[in-house]
Length: 347
Ligand SMILES: [Zn+2]
Image 1 (tube, rainbow, N blue to C red):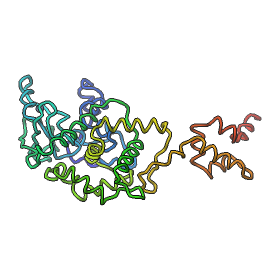
Image 2 (cartoon, protein in one colour):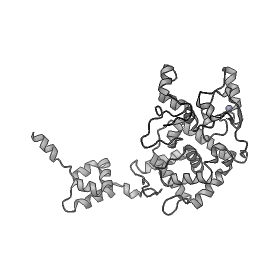
Image 3 (cartoon, rainbow, N blue to C red):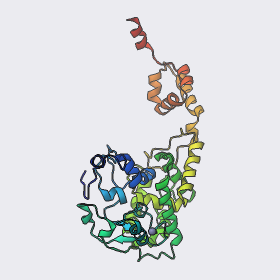
Image 4 (cartoon, rainbow, N blue to C red):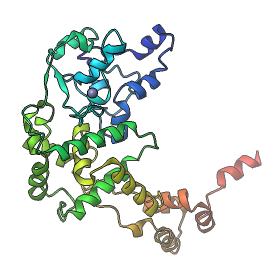
């Protein structure tokens, strides 16, 4: 991977600091935005087909801390407080969150670093060594205060959440259900652009004047978001995921409770359609019922010369489901072939 900014070698850092600040994984979870990306299931980097853990992948400092190489944000009042009991001010993680425009402590708009991003490529720069400007002066923050606060609160809640991770299929299914309930899906199950794009932009078009958001809320950016909704194998950027969740659910807690409800209703076993056909809709629940797979097995066993391997070939999904969830019944109906074990016992 090409490192385009100040590279982070966490193993060397922890070795040099004798672990005083923690292990590489602890540093990532306590000082960077990696927990946010992991929890959202949306990363600022493309993980590729053989993803390496963030602790050893060699990502740069800005990517891990901000999700991009351009922006470092701060709050003037926070810096002033730092300097009252420290020799210098320091960066705060919550100020770097993609959806946070206000300081969560002082409720004032954040400032953006004006130094060229390439200055951060060579060494670590502290806030006192750089200059800042008002980052959001081109946005009508007063008229859109509610949307901005909602987005900020959601970002902080994701970062601070320490409960179990939600699995990707559940998240995708719940987002699909919500889109469906707002009539934003076409009969084929893909995102209906005619309804989705104007509705999404009505909420977030005001962000188009901000450099961090302009690409994400452009026509091209929204089309990329739609494509990632149609097919979850397509990479979705973390900013898009935050905007989408804020827009559809309002808060991280509301989204999480819907995911938990979905998991309970599906007993953790209902597989969501893997979008092989680009369909956001969930596989009908009947497919998850034991009766459905048992019936498949009973039907198959009534054919001529049935065998376990033939059933696995003909009804792969039911075979796997029965093996994983109903093994006792399945082994009774369709006993495993013991020929090899029997032969081994003879010798
Ligand atoms: Zn502050």
